[in-house]
Length: 132
Image (cartoon, helix red, strand yellow):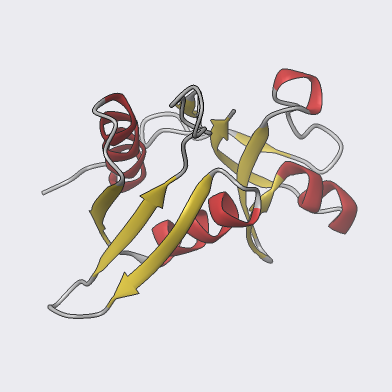
């Protein structure tokens, strides 16, 4: 039993990037699917596919690398809000990652989105992770 599925999702991505894997397979959940869509929209991953076979289903993510330097598009994935200590931010106090160059993934009442999208919609929520 996993106590923190989002941390497991981020760790699987981190491990796959360190091992230079092209594709990583992760057990699916609705929040992980939404986080994957955000990572794809912001250009951190190449593609994704939701496989609904089995009781839970899986997410297959194709990682993105620079063709010349072989460096991943994702430099760091950092979990912010944890089960033991949830981190919430209002629309006016949303965190900026690397001075606006990185992305914070926020779970709001209007769905999972980036910090910039949440600021334009004037909503706050739980800060799930930082990506840059």
